[in-house]
Structure formats: C-alpha cells, structure tokens
Length: 377
Ligand SMILES: [Zn+2]
Ligand SMILES: [Zn+2]
Image 1 (cartoon, rainbow, N blue to C red):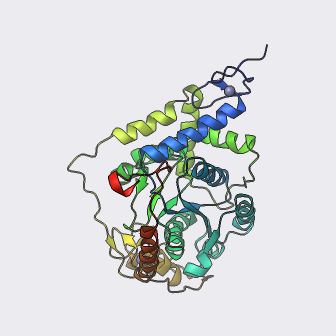
Image 2: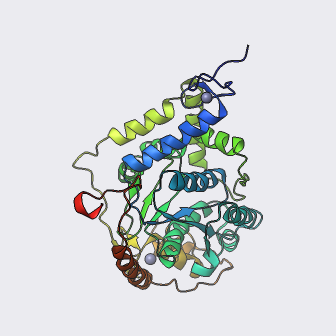
C-alpha cells in the first residue's frame, strides 16, 4: 500500500528525506527545504532590503540550486534584494568553459544579470597555464587563493553589498573535521561562521550552511534544474577527500552526524592563550591579509620568478629559489588592480545608491525589514 506523506497526510510519499528520515511528498519536500533556507536567512539577518547580492555561480549543483532558491525566496517573501550571478573563470579547459555555458543558460532561465571575471584577465595566469608550470600537485592552493580574491574583485566591480556561496552543511562539517585534524585553530574558529565581513566592505555568507548535500541534489533533480556535474579535471584536494569519505561513512550510520559536527564546531570556544592572526592590508594589492604581502601576491610572484613553490613550501623563499630547477613560464603577469582603487570606485557608486534609496521609503511588507517606529509607516 502506498504510504502517505508524513507532513501533509494527503499526497503519496515518494521520498525519504535525508536529513530527518521522514517519508514525504515532492511538494512538501520543496516547501520544507525552501523554508529552512528562509529561516536561516532571516534568523541570521544575512541581508537588508535593497542589498545587491552576488550569487557565486559555478554552474554546479550547489550554486544552481542557490540561485534558484534565492530568486524564489526573494519573490515569495519580498526580501527586496537585487540578485546577480557572479562567476569566476579559472581557465580550465574541458571543465570551467563547459560549466560556464551552464551558468549562461541559468542567466536566461532565471533572468538574472551575470558577471564573469577570469584569472587570465585579473592575474595574467589561467589555471591551465599554472598547472603547466607548477604541475598537478599544488594547483588547488593557487586556485583557492585566487578564487577568493576574484570573487571580491568581481563584487566590487558590480558594487555588490554581499556575496552568497553555495557551501552546504557537508562542506562545512568537512572543513571543521579537517581543521581539527590539522590543529588549525584560527581557521576552526572562523569556518563555522555563517557570515563574515571579509575586508569590511563586502559581506559573505552561506545560506546553505544547514542544508544537506543529498537534499540539494534531490532538489535539483526533482525541480529538473539545469546544472553541470563534472568534477574538476585537475587533482582534487586529497586531504579533503579523506574527510569527505569519513563524513559520508558517519552519515550512513547516523544521518544527524553532519549537523551535529556543525553544532559542535559552533559551540567550541577558542582558549584565550591561542594566538589568532591580526588582519592588515596587503602592501601590494590592498587585499585583506594576515601578512604584509597577501598569499595571492606571493603566489603570483613565485609564478613570475619561476619559483612556483614560493608561498606553498615552508622553506625560505631564498632557499627555494636556489634549489629551483628551470621552469618554463606559461603565463604572463598583469598588475592586479589595487583594491583601494576598486573600493573607492565602488564606494562612490554606493553613496549615490544610498542617496537614491533614502528618498524612497521602506514598504513594511518585506520579510527582512528591520525598521522600527516612524521610519517604517
Ligand atoms: Zn506532503
Ligand atoms: Zn596582495
């Protein structure tokens, strides 16, 4: 006999919800999934009405579902957000070029403006040329460091207030495990935060912090969303791979393990005698950094000087330079635009925007309104 949905008690249950084990119907699944994200957004006050939000879009399942859900919730609850798709082209042929085609289709499907920034254009080095120079072993370090900056650069060009990324509960639980296994306490204390202020100008958050990867896949499948599912062609991060497998094994035995690890990470308090890095700005490019020269600038310099191990290996740069074999350089650096310049430009546009907004008053019916008293009538 067909089972009834645990939630609505009318429709036939067609799925077993990975997060809770409930047997529910398709419509109820969509509703609970979307509503949980809505609560994450509202409870954590991620946005303000009028905010310009960039959705970090890679064409993969997480960011495609994120774009779809952000658009849906923005309309349903009248958040009053301006949404944009923001993509990074790392320059990985056979992978990113194909996934960007998906993003371009999403742009049409969801009717959202799209901005693509590329490593080639920002740094003068595509990932293909980096891998040709450094090999496959450490290339993920370059990619991760460059991506973070590239998103911030793109966000400043678009005058965004905030970037949302598709990191899901599994990703966060994995990161917590990895930081514990490495004893990386500064990162451990940061990785559970749902929202960060970055360099103080553009916020960043993870609306899917409590969303299970399995449910995101299920949602994308049942909604028939158009996404790209190939893994990156360059070597995956091996250490993360172990943490991922471990987490999957735990989830198979006890599905709540993922959320429980996140709760544990959130509740952990860093002892007072642990030294946390102090943040400053990079002397060269102005990006937020815990050293006088940021990691991206160090990596770029290493590439330029033919000593790509700089910034990766623990040895001194002098030693690395002495030991370095001759490597053919495949990229050609461009001077990255200084962050101060980008910020100044964005600040001017933002000022004008605030002036325009001040003349139009808040309409009370947005779910994100925080106005009190007279200003919101
Ligand atoms: Zn139902
Ligand atoms: Zn820098």
